[in-house]
Image (tube, rainbow, N blue to C red; front, side, top):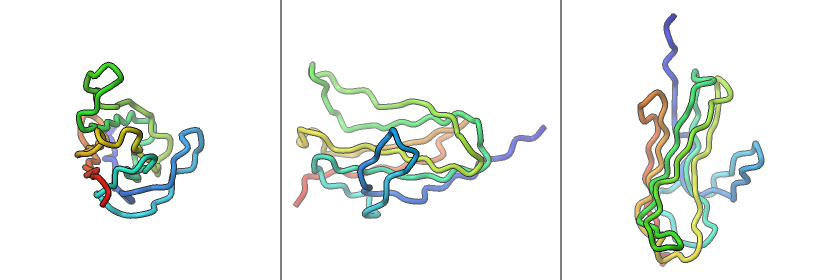
Length: 130
């Protein structure tokens, strides 16, 4: 039995409205960009559309710049898995800026992986606002 190849596209990326992870609604795109000002509660990331991959496991990862935890240790990348719920599914991967902003500046890379292959990859440049 042949396996259909998943069809994946990033349909929106940039700055979004605040995301409620308890809701099925995805955040709304406010500005298409990879340049993100380091302002507290700024939500940024991307929405992908994934077709032909229902019930497969999707792995996500957010590589932060070297942000320390409360003990001064560098935080590991934030990662996890989720099962694709539908044959035509939209998924949001993002993060937001929190205090202090001084250690949030730098490149934030976000990836999605399916069957051991990266299917979406976007790097955002978080900078001190002008």
